[in-house]
Each structure stands twice: as structure tokens, then as C-alpha cells.
Amino acid sequence: MKYITTVGDEQFTIDINQDGQITLNGEIINAEMRQMLDTTMYSIIMDNVSHDLRMNEGDEVYIVQLGGEIFEVVVEDERTRRLAGLKSSPGAVTGEALVKAPMPGVVVEIPVVQGQEVKRGDIVVIFESMKMQNEFKAPRDGMVHAIRVAPGDKVDQNAILLTIA
Image (cartoon, rainbow, N blue to C red):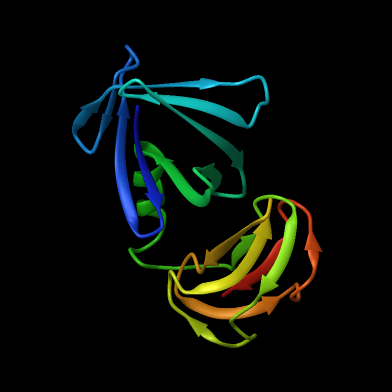
């Protein structure tokens, strides 16, 4: 099955064949992924080097923690992507984009205000979890519609921090 994966501004094509062989952007890679007993913890072995990661499924994205960094990863299979392209014109954006907490933590800073125009990739929330600060970026261009938290707020996993319309 072929997947189109987006991490930030980068897009990757991943193809996993019936034998489990993985191709990344057309290049065969030597990798194996195993789920640990904790349902969100995985071990990936690439070129005989093990990497631990934690992966949680959010709304329309996967929240991946790898090497002390948190990534929002959008994964679409080729069929779903083609069908979505038929339903809406290219570049059409509808609804609100939600910026959610990938895990429990504390809001450190919100460098935007309600009504502010933002571009995809602009930092909209600085969040601390597990003694590490993470910058959450706007998933798309738009306007900050609602800010639902304030600096110092403790939030649960999947709490909506702000919305972009």
C-alpha cells in the first residue's frame, strides 16, 4: 500500500509491499517497526540501529515523539488522497484547523492573538511536557479564530489549545 505522509512542510511517499519491504520516496530502506507492550511505544530498527518512538493518533494527525521532539504527521493512503482531490478543488480549505495538546502539559506562551492572520508553519503555541518545551505551528494559513488556553494552564491530552479558520 502506498501512503503520502506529511511532516511540517515536507512530504514523503512510503510504499509497503506485501512482503513488508518499505520504499521511501522511491528508495528501498532497511527498516523494521515493532510495537512494545505499551500500545503507544514502538521500536524502529533502521540499518541495525534501534530508535524508540511514541505515537498517538489524534484527529486527522498522528502525534509522534522521537528523539525528544514532537511531530504532527498526516498520513493518507493513495486512494483516500485521490478521492479527497475529487471532492474539493485544489487549495480549497474548509472548516477550522484545531491545534491540540498531543499529551498532558503546561501552556508556556501563546505568541499570537485572536484575529491575527497566520501562515502555515508560524509558531502559535509553546507547550511544555515532560520537562521539554515544544513549539506548535499553524497547520495552514488562516486567522486565529479562538484561543482556548492561557499561559500557565495545565491541559490534558487532546485538549484544544486554539483554532485557526
